[in-house]
Image (cartoon, rainbow over all chains, first blue to last red; front, side, top):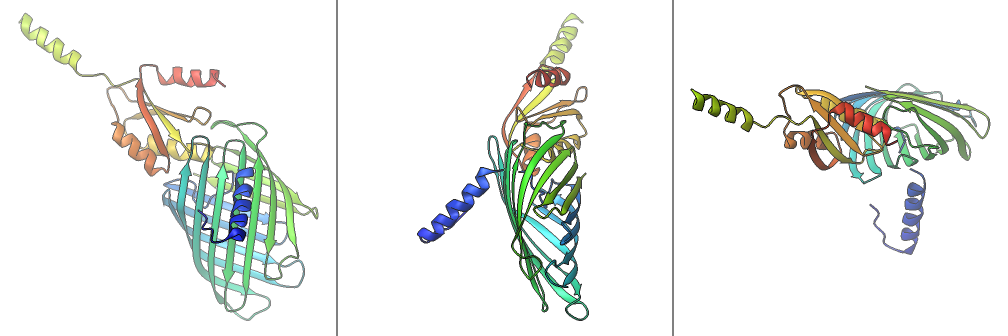
Length: 223
Length: 107
């Protein structure tokens, strides 16, 4: 997974690997399962609002559309982005008691904002690595939106712990610590949030607060 | 006439009856969405009667409709196309309800 050319790269790879392994999967995956439809909406502490809908013809590919609204909490800057997106499962490791995935995605769409005129072409690329057991979960997601007017990237790391091992028919409960970093003047510093995630069957609800007491809510349905 | 009936009986007995339950050991089975995807794939077989998934045991169990069967290679292909790794497939005489109860009892 990692190509290490020198000691510094090796140390970075070890740190990232440790980060991923030390927690583990309950991340929202851009592809849930083959012949499945996913609908997701997230409210992120007043800074980010997102909605996505995907259909996966295969377990390794999903196609759909997304909407992203960014509202800077450090300056009067907003973005409204809508795009069509393809998600690709680059690799999956099916282990005895765990699963790990690497996803990549790309999208094209249009965007408006209050610091540039009219509508611009938005290009999106993203990457996700996750690792999951029935009790631990870790994910790292990076999502970049670029246009002639802006370059905004959102990096999110989640570490989750389940107080009990759930089975298919059970209500699964996860406690998740999230760290999120925005570029492009959307937010200063890293935003931390503590979340409670519940899911059963194809329904997933997650809610919590950031270190500033702002709410974060996410819902996802797979069918 | 007697030999005809005997032949008929032998032919009848030589056709293997479908197993009551087909059990599949699966790697990567850790979350409800995994189970949901696998269940959806297996229920798509016309011969499938019912499906049980246990994350705890990493087991997928399936019963077929009366007199019907699903070949191992088709089951393996369905699970692989769902994104999972099949470790083993075996057929058991235990009914799917008994498997369900056994799985509940082992938790």
